[in-house]
Image (cartoon, rainbow, N blue to C red):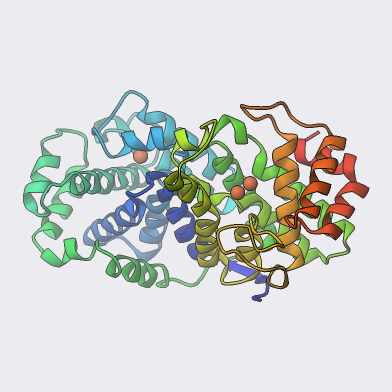
Length: 403
Ligand SMILES: [Fe+2]
Ligand SMILES: [Fe+2]
Ligand SMILES: [Fe+2]
């Protein structure tokens, strides 16, 4: 199993998170990656320095982090502007402002749907205004592409038709790039990912310690939980219960921090589940069960990109596995499940049972303990972890519910 890194590469985390936020598009993914590369190419054409392009690229990759629901995502690829377009800009900027390492990106994200002619009244610097508008230009370019418009100068001409919306120098630079067929071909995978990896490796790596990653994970956990009113505080509760159980089981500090990060991010793959499916009451058909089961798989893929294979990615990605081998989506056997994955699985069940659901009220601690005993008997949860959980029942309840 891979170990927990002592430092984490910020650009690697940003790329992985960008992919996670793109999952809200369900099957229409890759938007933020394409916006990032288009914006970076336009900035390069305008002669920007590498450091400025790096910052713009990060903001472009995260520009839609304020969108958690498929309902809101639907609007993103439609009209140039819509009634509530400013909401996801401000929400996303708020998330970024609360993360010290990403706070400088917040003003660009806040203004990424503001028309160029209005940006001079927004109290931002010229540099931020142009960066925000280049994200807007790249965003609309991709929206037209995904809408079926043929790549080329005609597409840029369509954007020019929105007088005053885009900075003239940005449009002119895009127009020059648009003559080159390779500019458009480079927006297709796998060339797109290779180009982004090369670009993010241009400067010296910016490294985060595990405390900084934990702060970032806590914010991302809130974005995941915003997907549904019934999952409010779920990820935070799973993180806190996981740490508590890890502490009670005598695990070391680095492992406990990794457990907390895994707890915050264990459901990051849920960003791909359509809103109506997540909130649906009653039986699911086979196709919908498959969509639901996929979230733990997607979690592991994203966290492997973010943190490397093993450790955090496995602890989070295996949270629906069972000792009996009847869990999902990997159907691992008992011997393949490490203690940390068993802890996150117990914390996940505990928090979910302690939370209100559309079909039932929150369960009290004794009811949860009895249900978990049944799950141990059925080969779903680890007996030792559940025993520790029962020894610290009231503390787990407080951790799960924020009490
Ligand atoms: Fe947007
Ligand atoms: Fe889950
Ligand atoms: Fe969960």
